[in-house]
Amino acid sequence: MVATSTRTFELDALSSLELHHVEASIVTYRGRRAVRFIEREESTTNDHAFGILVDSDFKDGIIETAIAGAPRPDAPPDMRGFVGIAFRMQPLGTRFECFYLRPTNGRANDQLRRNHATQYVSHPDYPWYRLREETPGVYESYTDLVPGDWTPIRIVVSGIQAQLYVNGAEQPCLIVNDLKLGETRGSIALWIGAGTEAFFSTVVVK
Image 1 (cartoon, rainbow, N blue to C red):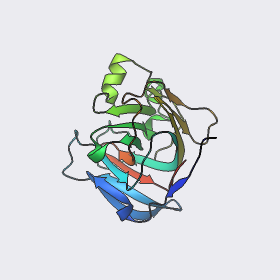
Image 2: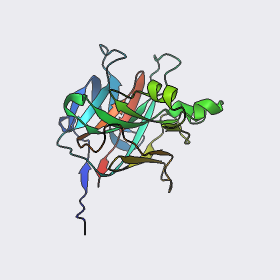
Image 3: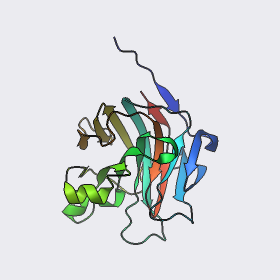
């Protein structure tokens, strides 16, 4: 029998996070205690903005949380409210795997945009634009999203495979069978993209 354990990260204090290129605050958002992220003003488009869960250590298992994201009012029109969870992150975020959402794509009046509602990336070698160019449609998919709404997500990781479940669905909306970093282990982090205001609630790791 394989031993199992559950760890809960409440996110009720900024001391539980190691922040990189983000401004963070503890707030109540739409009825939930949460941490709010926006990019630091000095951040550039090449900087990844994230908060590592202190003392997290993850290889295989399940990550469950609820996230909310939307473009900031001053964001350029091509920003989508990028918000997600990075896992198996190496120190200082030098390498990591990540699933994220583009909330404004979920109900766009354009099928191609809808097909880009979810995304897998692997930093540093496989950003979204490389994956889209080399293997279009393989590492992103459609799922129903509403900007700013709390969105439950579940990430299931085993070996070099990972699956993303959204809004309590029984089936994954995105499947990755070849995680680009291989069978690594590392931290879990809250991740945002450019021009985003995002909120994260309690993270449960099994």
